[in-house]
Image 1: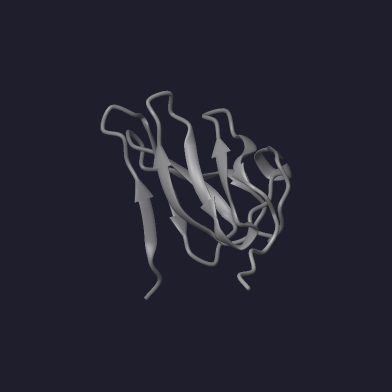
Image 2 (image 1 turned 45 degrees about the horizontal axis):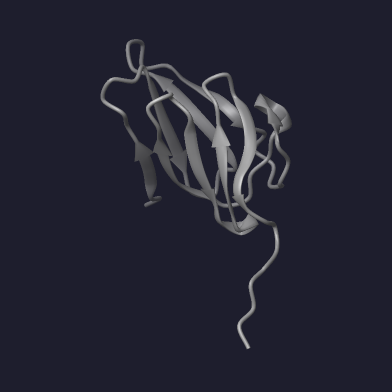
Length: 102
């Protein structure tokens, strides 16, 4: 069984859904229950951009803020990505570098 991480803001009309091993961020309309891809291509990578030009590698947990922005932990890229309601993806925190402890 795959783990599904969901962030839901009760007053929002957008539901952010994420399925492990799927490098896209899906949005679901609560009123119509239609799921569509908000950002990502299905191909692993690390590119900011709008909609299908953005890529993720290991998106895992999600959270929504009061403005409807979706924050995604992009674990294989070691960063947190921000997705606006318009589907614009930017790197919110972190860098694509592995950490090493000595």
